[in-house]
Length: 96
Image 1: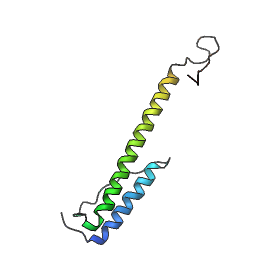
Image 2 (image 1 turned 135 degrees about the horizontal axis):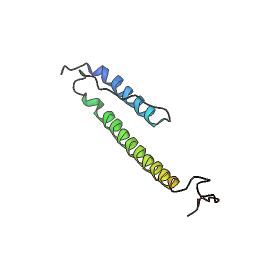
Image 3 (image 1 turned 90 degrees about the vertical axis):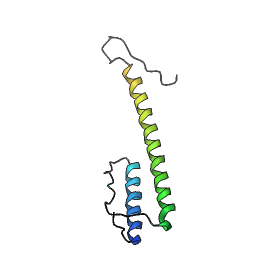
Image 4 (image 1 turned 60 degrees about the vertical axis):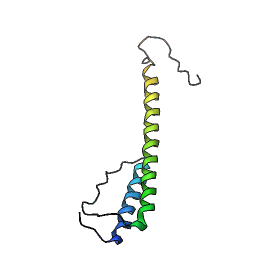
């Protein structure tokens, strides 16, 4: 793996941070592909890279939690019979 000049690492981290911001947006985000010839990260950018990694991990945890919540809501909605399936009125308990 060839070492790239350390001047390129801020750009690499900028792209990762932008990808992270897009991932947290309601829209979709493309996957990040690491540069094949990035080389070792310079020591003066290590702390920033750690912050980016931590933010990515928090985003994954948040999105996973939201996905689980949505799955629970969908499961609850699936228990409600379709209107007209029973010929009776259907009430959804939103409190308990």
